[in-house]
Length: 386
Image (cartoon, rainbow, N blue to C red; front, side, top):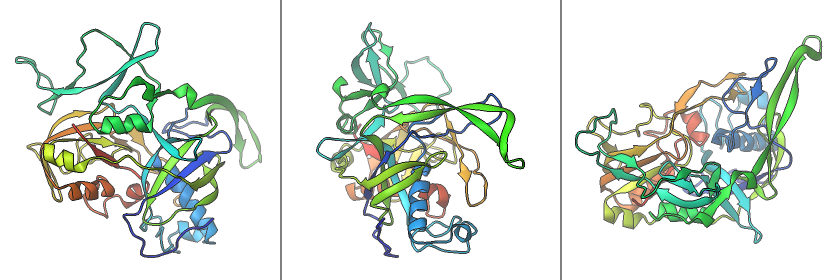
């Protein structure tokens, strides 16, 4: 594998990699399993930390770093730093993707919280509809913390459709403030299938199968041409080779992705003085669902930006954890705002250049805050037209 070892990389350069599994994957979620009769569910797509771990491990192995010494903090990698003090490497994006016939890689996105797919009587996708921030009618009371509510206006009742994903073209339409057409939807069944596998617990002392320790796990079998798109800043990750990905370290090929990203018209957003913030990876926020930098008056104050938070569509909180290989212990369990959460801002004061720089940094108030999770790709977002 080849990569740049420049100790002073340009942090603004984004390197895209397409990770394509060579086998089924065990993408374990946040629930313990392994006890007799337990069931291990898989999470698709997995957390961005899965990509961060796979790419960093490949870089350490390629550079001949003593993994035990690195885990103990006795060796510092010029780009990865140490487990306790990560270096320049950071995952800037991680999503499902597919390889097209012409070699390009297209990102695939779960429906954001402000977009609903509606089905017809036969269960087929009929249309997509956007949630609209709406002032509640006089006399209505609720525990909502924001002045506007995300409302789905419907002339006729429709049945929500689950298990669908947006193509990159549909994602671009949504970021531009337009409603994507149904031909921009893909079914989950077109992207992957689940295969249940039975596992056997092992007795380490006797070096044999443990009595009565059968459990079941979900294996994820991605369709041909389906994989993951990982975007990395701070250094150039491996450009080719094989990674150990997910539980049991199943093989996955990594290659440079020819991926033209979606461009957002930041100048138009500044001119309109309002915007949406869409989480593209889970958000670790000190105040739960609320964006960092929001004061008691719901005023958002980021470096070079001021706006008023008026509405939010946030699904039930997820919990992220994981296994810390360096410490040989579980990572702390933390509540996160799910990927696809949407926040509406008005009275926006910022320049296009400021919006671009803020989106590149992610939702971190300062560099030292939770440096490990920052390097793993959490708190990433994009601005979008409202």
